[in-house]
Image (tube, rainbow, N blue to C red):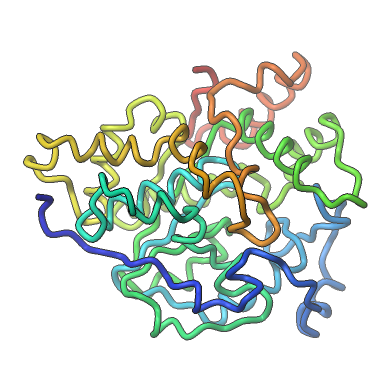
Length: 346
C-alpha cells in the first residue's frame, strides 16, 4: 500500500453555476468595470475572437480579463494548495491528470475501474481559475472547497503572485518548445473558432505569434516569468518542460511527487506505482477514453479537440524554412542568456 500522502478531492461540479458545470458558455455581458477598462487598453485582432487586449503586459480576451480581475480581487491560495500554471497547448491536460493522480493515489487506487480520471475530464477535476471558478461573474466561497485544492491557470506569474505569495501554496509550471506550441495552438484555434469568425492562415497566425500577440503571450515573457521565479524560489515553483516529461516520465514523476510533498516510497516504487501513474495519465489512454471524446469541460471547447498527437517535432510538417529561421531568431533574442532552452526534435 502507498505511504500516507496528501489527498485532494475533486471539486464538486455543484460548486459552479449550471453553465460552467456543463462546460457551456452563456453569452453574459461584461461588467461595467471591465468595459471601462477595455476602452483604455491596446487591442489587436484575436486568433478566435475579433479582438484581444493587452492587459498588464499580456494579451487576452475580454471575458478572460473580467475573470482575472475577479480572481485577483477574491482568490487567496491556502497553505497546501497547488496551482498548475501553463502556456496554452503545452501539456496542460496531461499535467492536470498527473498531479491529480499523484496527490490522490491513496484516495483513488490507480488500478480501479472507477478512478475519477477514467470517468471525468482532467479539466473537470482540476478547474481553471479564469475559465471556471471565476468565470461569468461568479465569486465562489472557497471555504466550502476541499482543502487543500488543485487549481489551474494560464495567467502569467506577475498577475497571480499576489494571490499565492501569502501562503505556502506551490506552483507547478509546464511549457513546451515554441515550435510545437505554435502548431498545436493554431490547429486548436482553427478547430474551435466561431463559425462566423474566419480562422487565421498559418502565415497570419505565425507572424502574430512571433510578435507576441497570442492569448496570454508573448510566450517568452510567460515562460521567463515562471522560469526566473523557479530559479529564485525552487521550493515554491517547479518548472517543467513537456519534452523532458516525454523523454523520462519516471524520473520526472518522482521529482514532481517529491516537490508536492508526497514522494513515492521505496515500496511504491517496487510495486510499480510510478509506472501505473504514467500509464493511467498517458496521452494514448486519456485520448481513447469515452469521456474525452465527447462533452465539454472548458466553456465551449469540445473535449475531443484537447487531444491531437502529443508528439515532439510535428512542426516540421507545417513550417517553412523561413518561418523556422524567424522563430529561431525570436527565441535567441528573447530567451538568450536566460538558461532556458528547448528540445525541438524527438
